Every structure is written in C-alpha cells, then in structure tokens.
Length: 214
Image (cartoon, rainbow, N blue to C red; front, side):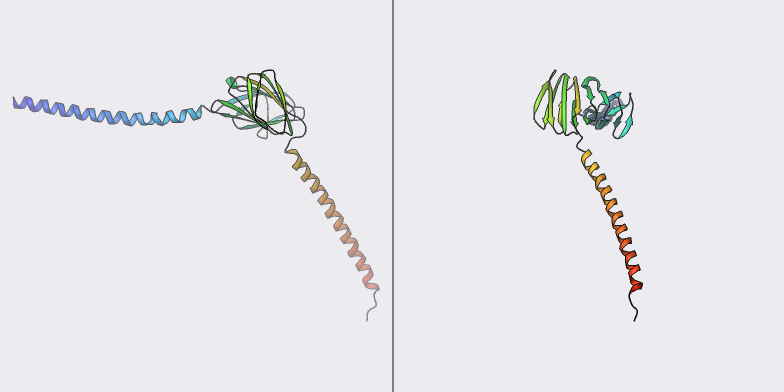
C-alpha cells in the first residue's frame, strides 16, 4: 500500500515538473512573436514603384534610368528638358513627372509624400485627391489644377493619379550657373593679371640697363 502511494506521488511530481517546463518553454517561443508584431508595421510602410520613360532622359538619384527601373521610397526622380516619366506605385497610384522637373517620392504609413524642387510648380490631379501642405494648405480633387510659387509638399492616401511639372528654371540650377560664370571670370582675371605682370616686369628690365652706373 505504501509503495503504491509513493508511486502516485512520484508520478504527480514528474507531471508537475513537465508542466512547469512546458510553460517556460512555450513562453520563450512566444517572446519573439511579440517583437515581430512590432516590426512588421514598420516594414509595411515601405513601397516600390515601376518607372516608365515616356520621353527624353530620366534619372533616379542622379543615375540614368530606363523603363522598368524600380523606384524605392525616398528616391529623387529628375527629367531632362524634354523628358517625361510615369511612376506606377500600385495601390498608392501613379505620378507623372513633366519635363525639366525634379521630385522626391516617399512612403510613410500608407501615405504617399510628393516634394518638388521648382521655382514654380504646376499640379494636375486626374484621379483621387492630393493634400497640399506647402506653400499653401489645400486639397485638390480629381479634375483640378493648381500652380504654386516654389516647390510643393503634398500627400495622398492612395489611388492618386497626378501630374507634377516644374515651370521655369529649377531652384538648384541658379547657384551652379553662377559658380561657373564666376569661375570663368576669375580665370580671365588671373590671366589678365599675369599678362600685366609680365608686361610690367619686362618693362622694368628694359629700363634698368639705361640708368647710369656710378
């Protein structure tokens, strides 16, 4: 009888030990799942698009791009003076970039951010709606056009079809042109100074021998 009781107690002890071990083991496996649920929404904010070159030359982050190139979030897309491109972003919509235009596309929490770099920006919304936050705050619906002084900051929550085009010279072009012109003028000035220096130096040498020696 005592042997049977001891056996039952030993069985219960083993069962309890296995139960405790199982609980701790399952808890250790469950911990990574919690971290994964925190990271996944961040990854979901990313997006990619496909480029279609309609005309001229197009660059992505300063590199020449062709039709079929992948446009990542945060990319800078620029077109030449006769260039035109379309970026298809799937559910977020599509963005057409006019000639001589530079824009930056960024995806944040399911929203498409568009930023242009122009002295004057023209926007045409063909589908969906676009929330412009700078230089003025307004919402453009399908069928609306607007022009803004300077670049724009705008966003859309999806399904947008919009054309963005710069009018006039891009903001970044001025300083580079000015620097080139100043450099040319500086070279001309240096050349002129050297020429004058040589002429003056040559004149001094021709006069020196004529002075009397005492």
